[in-house]
Length: 555
Image 1 (cartoon, helix red, strand yellow):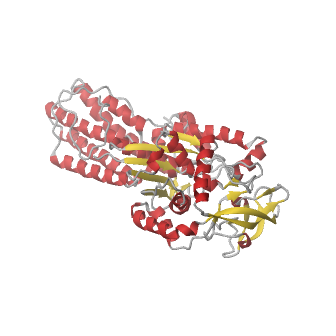
Image 2 (image 1 turned 60 degrees about the vertical axis):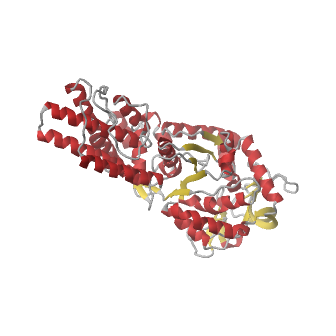
Image 3 (image 1 turned 30 degrees about the vertical axis):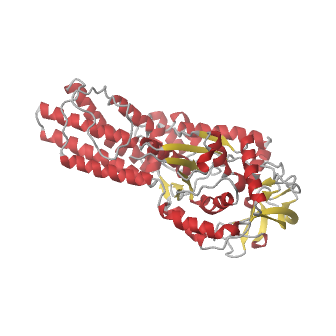
């Protein structure tokens, strides 16, 4: 193992909406699993995140609730953190982009880009809603795309064909808040000269994207082949809920939320006292997100930093996922479709470890994946209880009952050691490449190797001394299993290490070794994973928006 310095970020969750499983699996949980894995490999890791709070969406929602945008964000940021705490997601810093330190950092970076001459002023026609008395942010204009005739056009982009749109490209526009037809009105804005960095961005994509996940690489390479154009980075907002533009002539305007939001990574790194990591060539930047954020992290944000005089870091890895669906449909809060983080608090449907494991097992790495209750049931019963839990219980119970809790001489067959070595090698390779779903498959493979070894021992009905040797040898398989489980199910892995009386040296090794030797004391067995209770089953059935696709039997 070699120590490296890794700066890990997950896409900042927008505070306007409460997170559902798709939000959690795509960035936050994946980044947490990778951060935990990297620490267990001896790397120096800083994992930062925070709520993205500025913009029109917060203003509109606050209006509907009759509170200020600041109060809305304070309330919802707390709710977000409650969900992430329940999922056992551990950040070094979890901040908020509405804090004063972020305003200062954003304005500092803006002024560096301004002084370096990378902004252009333009007078533009923008959509203005007379009924709402405000200019409409891009994502609050809906209409028909002039190019493909899709009804999924927004103010700046068509979700149907993916084309960046101008105001003239949106036909029959409507205000997304009140459904009125907006007028067009002049306003002056600043544009970031993104095209000035075309060559440098293309070089970075060429240099780094080979190590990215397939979704991120495909999207970045598509942008590499496009001609970049200036991007507007200021907005007129009703309540001016954003970072103020810090130059004269633009009083009352704020910076576009996609300008300030990624700067949050820098703000939060500075909060941790490690701002220098953004300029240190030895720091490796790992960014986790859904595929819809790849443009901003591979093109727009890096170009912004290229325009500064003090800070630049291009991601070594963008780990982007496709979308997680719910029973073959999209998550929808309005339609009560899907599982949202607050549904799970207080272990309503099982502990966090089960959810962490299942979400990483179905992580949408190469294509969209589907959350189904049938597969969740399989993860809990077939894998965590029957494959992992039963293996641990059989080995530990035997050592306690037949050997008085003290291990006998250990000596695993060479073929078993080689199989474990091979699985561990693959596990480390997949996890380092942020292919976490494949890493989880190797955890199951290690458990299956252990089960095969133990089952053969019981089927051969060997002498007590030989059985004691074999079960003691199997305890080392359990130790390896606890190590590779640690990033995914940290609480349950720690519990297993407590049972094995081996919590001092929790690292993930390069090779399998029989660390636990003759005479080592094993503690009594406890259940690592439990079936759903009757009450939890009722919660499952309430959350299903249609008849449950599998039969849930009460215990």
